[in-house]
Image (cartoon, rainbow, N blue to C red):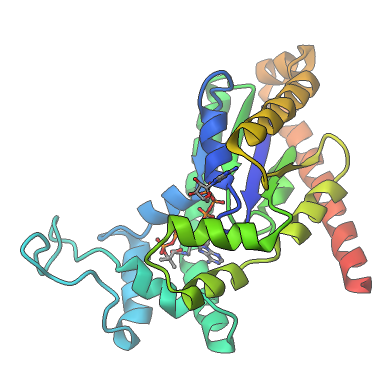
Length: 270
Ligand SMILES: CC(C)(COP(=O)(O)OP(=O)(O)OC[C@H]1O[C@@H](n2cnc3c(N)ncnc32)[C@H](O)[C@@H]1O)[C@@H](O)C(=O)NCCC(=O)NCCS
Ligand SMILES: Nc1ncnc2c1ncn2[C@@H]1O[C@H](COP(=O)(O)OP(=O)(O)OP(=O)(O)O)[C@@H](O)[C@H]1O
């Protein structure tokens, strides 16, 4: 089974591509890290308790305020949900304090997300899917690209297009908040270069400065290419022989780690 790591930067079009991939004619299973990242911090979870413990004392508006529809102890009595924009204000931005807080939040959320994703990928393998898409905003930053047969970066060449789409989609964000969110992630053009550096067939870029129709065409061509490379007899052999599949997966992870180190070495020389 081919693991496709889909990434980009904020508002470059990752969710748009992900919904194209999960719809016919592609109909691929998509594991969405953002959705899982929400599930693992719902009231009552270990992630929720850790966030409240760490950020609660210094963030008065950390939880959604009580109201007629929101009881003091939350809808299920497990606490009120997190006030996500308020937590976002604590962690997005490039000051040292924000970076520290973001690292703490990532340290709470990411391990739980990784474990949940692993379980879902195994489920897709057992269902006999030829490919699964991992939609992960921080694919390279969290080094999960090592586990992907192909990385696909949704990118725009013009930063103004990214900012315009972000402000149109999230109209509640101020210009400063939008800027903070963009700056909290690596430049999408660098991510695109990192994907391409993995080599032909292993890393692709879906450029999304144009229309949705153009994007759909790019996605269709990319899926066609991946299917051609991964839909032969070899895939059936791997499906029929799990120990061989594990050995091949281990070799690919090693190879991807090597490609990653090579990229980091080249970057450090720049
Ligand atoms: C800070 C939070 C509560 C803000 O929630 P909010 O609903 O306002 O934004 P949302 O989650 O939709 O994120 C919007 C976009 O911001 C970017 N983003 C989210 N978290 C991070 C992060 N830790 N670092 C950099 N960029 C991030 C992503 O592009 C994401 O798609 C939330 O983003 C969060 O819990 N982040 C930490 C978990 C995480 O890293 N999630 C990303 C996938 S694992
Ligand atoms: N080619 C396009 N033409 C016009 N609008 C687009 C195009 N692609 C995406 N958009 C719009 O831009 C906005 C951002 O796209 P999308 O939500 O897919 O980005 P994203 O990378 O998933 O963002 P995030 O990381 O914040 O979740 C959305 O409102 C989407 O409808």
